[in-house]
Length: 153
Length: 176
Image (cartoon, rainbow over all chains, first blue to last red):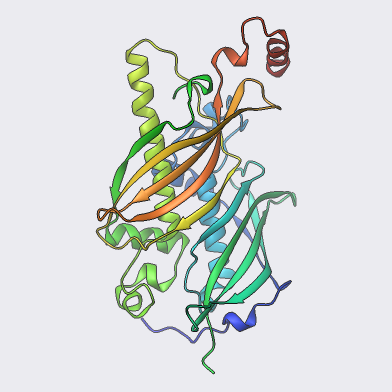
């Protein structure tokens, strides 16, 4: 597999820098297919059954929302970066139900960056990710540090 | 699912296990996390991971699946004994997710969940909120994932306690 040299390295991320991506449609079929595979609860699978749950209608699995956020990040900048993955996620808040066929927009904001003490070839970039629905409502936040390779000097 | 009122801090459940195959890992990565180290053996071998490994979101999503399967088995057993079954509600989120080691092709992850806190919901008196620590361990006994999540669980009798007029009143309002 040949890959272009990524444009973004750790050095290119500064507090306050933002990346936006979307809107991306969440097709009903894919939303339900994910639920069938990973989160087969009535509120994520069946319109009629979902109406009697706290979600008051069919809603995306929170894990599907995380996966969509990941894919949007990949398309926004991660695939064009020296990404080395992430050691984890500080916090995720599912603030509002995400509905089938909704259109989501991602905003990624750099909070801070630090070099790795033990691994001089990489550094950390801490992000706040926000997902908005078509009505402009904030539906989910995710804060995490990504590991990115440094430029060879 | 047990009712909120019957759930004790310290209760621990082994949910089940899953073996991550190469095709499984790549299919998930193609859809949601198409970074080279989750998609391509040769590229992964050159990366800091050293070999093809699962997206952390794949490892996490599989916890959810095994949790739902566990609850279904538990509900079936309770129905068979003639017991009432509580509804598992939605989750407001999670924190402190750590991907502690890569999950490589062929690794089998065993997932468990432990209750670490319980509290009544102020805004929804017929529901309680439990905080759980969720973990996954590979076949060598090494922890690969850990996170703390919060979930709503239905209360017995809509949260109404005997002689607790306030609670019954709130519950009636909630149902209205």
